[in-house]
Amino acid sequence: MKEKKSFKENSINTGEVSGRIPTFSIVAMCLAGFFVLWLMVEMEHASLIDDPVRSAVISTRSAWLTPIMKVITYMGNWQTITIICLFLLIIKKTRSTYGVPLSIGALFVSFANKGIKAIVMRPRPDAEMFLIEQGGWSFPSGHAITSMFFFGMLIWLIRRNVTNHRTANVLTVLLAIPMILIGVSRVYLGVHYPTDVLAGWCLGVLVIAVMAEIIAKKDR
Image (cartoon, rainbow, N blue to C red; front, side):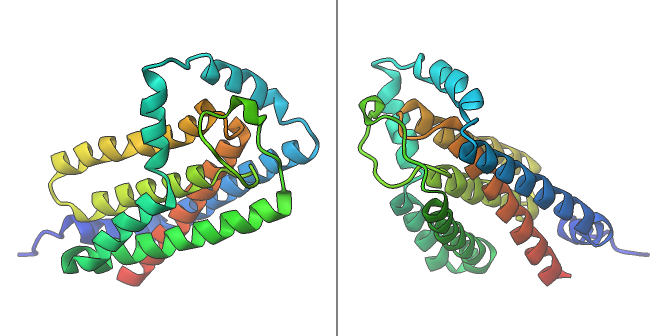
């Protein structure tokens, strides 16, 4: 009598059949989205997205919401991500499963973001709208790419390794909140354009897809 395959084994076998095509599609769509946004910035057409979205987000500013948005944006700071990565690396049970891939990916997106910023050199929005201090170039948003990769990759790893589906679902919802809201907070606080955030999200999802494929191949 054959033993039932584990959830992880089933996931791996499914990936052997269909993993490559979805990964290629995701990477292609993310690259296309990123380059379209970059082209809009270079051709000075980004305002078609930036102006209405930025106006709508900034219109929600209030005395009670601003402190919350500041806390949310700080969750995407490199200091916060570094502390979480070190914590996962120190604990033996989470080191190889979570700590190593998240740390490698976080370092990669950080360097990639800096390189792209240096190429595009898009100035930030008017400093008069800033609710926090922020320097450097604007495109893409480093907080958006880092938070999308880090929390999105963590969700993928949890759903791959946590056998309790209820726990995995709860953690997915909790981690999806900062994954999205950190990017939104950058527009709310006035330090990024919406197209900066969208470009960061595209790159973050791209790196998740590539990392997930690498991990799946390693397991196979």
